[in-house]
Image (tube, rainbow, N blue to C red; front, top):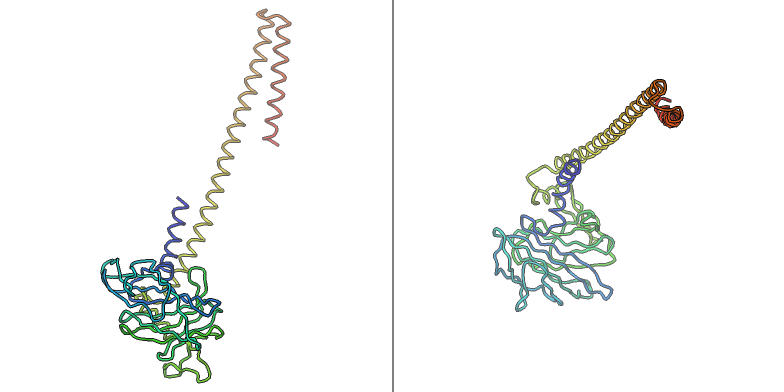
Length: 309
């Protein structure tokens, strides 16, 4: 029972986080690009597309893509990614490919779904991504499935919106800055972008959990964590109490048994004394039984002393 309660509380805490960051089947419309740079200058890209669509929906293979491998929800046919699975009017497609950027680090991509939350994820410490034709927002590093990523992108996009991305493995991304009026303000001497709390609030509102205040959401998580800790302490104390009670009951039973055995031996000793006096047993038989009862009585008395000292 204890394990079931603790497991339920833990699931309540982890389910939202796992649903958003570790599961590709997210509600809403999203387009995530996971970038992994190679030593030869090429980039491996894992593309996750989630949003409205039907089986048979087609997307063009990204410009310059090679070694395309559709791993979920679709197939590659005639240089197009075709959806093969539909769940309640939504599609979820994952495919991998390799792209060779230009000497300046540029490569092109067309965002396939209208209104998609377009996010490019780069492993922390592996450089930064900017765009030469779109203004991107950059969030602080975030842990996703045990790895830290820097997220850069658009909160919303148009269907087939072309975007030219520029990857710099030596750049260090920083959060996007805003001026006093709330407008994004890019530095003329840097290709890095930053983001403000208002931008994050917009991203939260566009997420599957936008219906709840983010501060309230994390407050609920904190409360549930406290409940898990308190439940663990309570059940631990209850288990220790049960063990002590069982041990006490066993000792009490053993003590009562020794008292009964001692009384039985005393009665037997008196009984053979009467039998000797009445002539029912001989002197020799009496002495043998007396010695046996005496030895047993001494042994029982010593055992009882262990409980009384």
